[in-house]
Length: 366
Image (cartoon, rainbow, N blue to C red):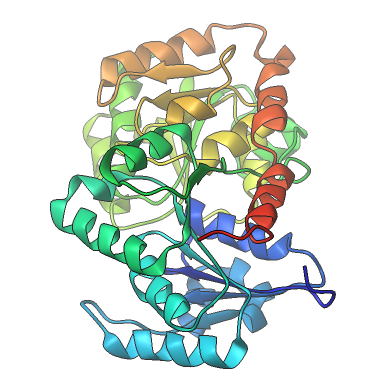
């Protein structure tokens, strides 16, 4: 490695609250102090993105927005080629298919020595057109291809005849996400001290499945309530669903929550009711705070769950979800659980993830 450190550029589709985007910010935050790190967002503008996600403010000088519009934009490719030619990065790290198509091509054309591409899920590979596009992009850009979970690795191997594939599991900051006072956390969010609180976090969109959690409420005891962190286009529809099912008094919409550590610590159980996922960070963050987790069996979710305290639910099965939540609520020893945090520490510590990515950019490949 160069004595002055490396120049690293991460390229994402957009910078909005989400697991992939949070992970990229963590890679920036935890980079070697000698390294110069930038994040390039294909879509969006700086001020509006920071306004929508205040967490970005602290990284203002290290984030660049290309304001890409829908459809193929050759000017974006030209902007990346110009930037890479000027900056001369040692590493270009793309995340998902859009950034691979644009920044992968640009990085290869500019002879960037280390090109890394991470797939955070593989749902898009079900689409034949996207598969062909990605196959072409991989053959041209020739990056080291990284899967963030074993399931994603297997899916990539099944559709691409590509040699440079490895697995680096997502990691979370276990020093940040750790157990803390439940009483103080509940006061912060005005949650009842004696209620059994099930929480979920994520964009309020159909794919995240908050409606399935709300539909489970009439099937379980009234003392069980849910707290939902996040915002999105489905908020009004979810509020109407809760009203229709007569459970509005048991559903708390908290909006966009910045203090996620306190949110997780306010819960008795964390629930991931998603219809589609890669390897979700929220389940790991909750368990790092020692909160047992109930989750739908989609994507690589199974890999994130503590085998002792986690409950895996059949996808799109609301009665099974309700049963698992009820069963977890009957466990009198929840406060004594130590297994969720231990499991995350052993398998998903962010320092291990960062070290693994650093090693990739210290190895030569074809």
